[in-house]
Length: 302
Image (cartoon, rainbow, N blue to C red; front, side, top):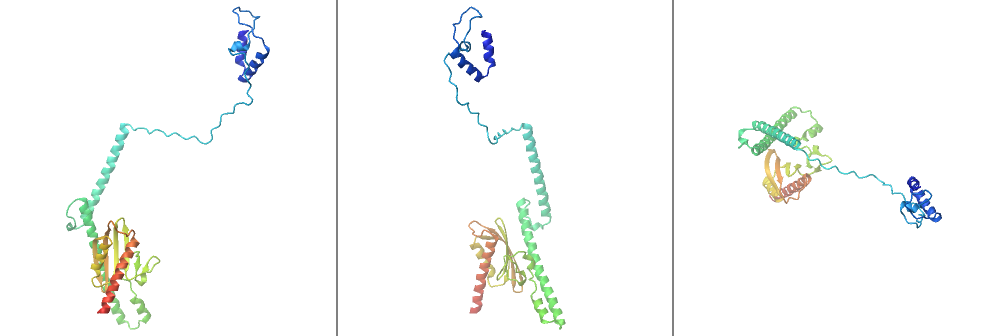
């Protein structure tokens, strides 16, 4: 009998077992346990499952279900896999090969650059000397190009004047158009911040007393100025550049009749308040305006 009750208790669910225990504790009578294996003796379920005969209170509401997890679980970051010695060595050798190839190409380019320059521009064979000599050589070529352009313009002007003198049937309108010829240095000004030429007005330029174009790369500025020649103009420009913390590295001067072209390579030093190419162009225009006003006063006094 005891074995059958144990099997029945195990087969019942938790709720059915609870109801069974509560019912049996109120109706059935308990009998003491005896060693005699008599089938007529019965045991209560409390004795079988080893609990007290007191009744267990029934729960009014079933326990709430566990809350469902909302949202997406965060993925765990995979731990960094330590590279083995073979992979680290392969990466190191690849880096060394890339760096060796880069140095080889740099040396080849420097050798070609040195071969294109006269020996007088390269004092030593190190990289800094070669690059510095190349800068000097390029500036010299630029000056030669500007001088040849001015000479070409003068020859073309003389030829046009001779043709106009021979042709007496040219009307005044054509003469007026021929007088507004392009400046001999117009090709050296691509996008000037200030322009005084009639044929160079654009939406980005301003009418001024000189053509001024400034390009700025990091702390190095390339400045071109085309204006009329004035007394002590160059010395005043150099002094004004130093006053605004602009160090002149290279300077080329090309003249044509009453015009002068300044090609200046300058470095922006610490303490300079000019942060852009437009700021530098505005400062240069202010310098030239002051020089122009002083020249006008001197002409009036004389």
